[in-house]
Image 1 (cartoon, rainbow, N blue to C red):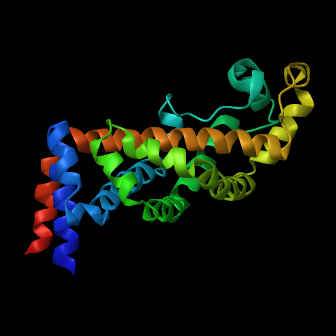
Image 2 (spheres, rainbow, N blue to C red):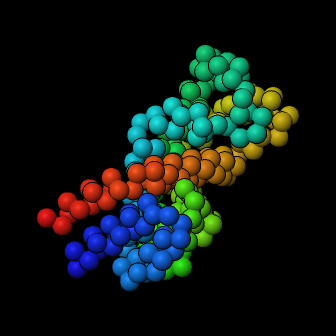
Length: 228
């Protein structure tokens, strides 16, 4: 059984390296038909992405996925500096990003569960699709469900890190927040951080998938070690 599972993963690895026509033919083989290899590949991309984003400071360090306050407060750096120096708040932006990182750490089984629902048709589409076909599949088929499951993780992290209390203080002194209509309520902040967290996760999964597709045979060689 182990040999069969590993073989399927190797076949899927080789399939991703083949020409488009060959990939369609290869994807129809029995081993890939079980979707085992494709699930493993996409699962590894998901795990790698979440492992990277769950590292301390990872979200904040990458401006492409950095979590920001909602609405006009997104770029209100002067207000944030004022409230921080006045001792009213800590570094709110970093707190939000730390919460996203904690949520990413706990989200691995959530994404793995979605990947386990991969069908043969989905698997063939991922093998023959573009560089981020797997990430696109997850977002298209499970994005809303995944967000609903990640949201409580975000809420828990925001609570433990004191983000809600900090934002409440910010809202009480920020005329920009009131006039700009920024939703600084608990639900508003949770929704905003969840949406941004999901965007970051999917972006990283797509990057990991693209890396694998650029050198699938290297991964295949690593998988071969499992045979011995």
